[in-house]
Length: 295
Image (cartoon, rainbow, N blue to C red; front, top):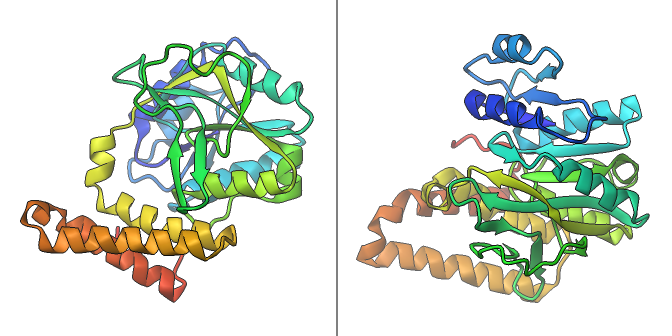
């Protein structure tokens, strides 16, 4: 399942990449989240085998994927893959993910090694870990050259990036869909935590490989990303019912960053990101979740 939102060229490249899959028992679903570019005709013409849902508005990562997950449940589908549009894949990656879930009754979610598209030997994610003392998360292996340090066997991690995530639909029946309050960012982390608390294992599968057209520099410069990462980190702490220590650290971290971006001349260019963080804090305090009206 791929979510398209004004990213037609990436989506078409991803669909072309999926034609290389060595795993044959699959069907591709694209959910268009109300793109202004109206991609339906081009997708249907070039890839008539693809099932296309037109959401009509931007439902975010959570709402768009929940449309597909609901369809998968109705159809009795065993596994569903959530895949970012801006990815390309190794032909056998899905086979490795399916085998990992097939051979582990307790596993509910599996994800691949994810590399930078522009630096194909450099890892962006080998699964994720949560620092429950600090209320923070990070990608395992980020910016490391892949030297086989994560072995070849599936390994338990705290969460899998929503960039590429295979789920057992029996797990979804038990734990529910993605939490649409997040809209985008932190939603897959909360989903993995929720699943783990139901007793499911979350697996990184090193032999499964994909490449992600992600730019850390663009993410860091984006006020929208800062908004969702700020508000949703707090929502993640609330949803997972953590204690006082991670709340204290997170709020101190945010305060220190905002003060630095306000008083230090070298951070004057961070004013849009600072404003986004302040709006995020106010929205969290007011209980305003889902899609922001600012961006």
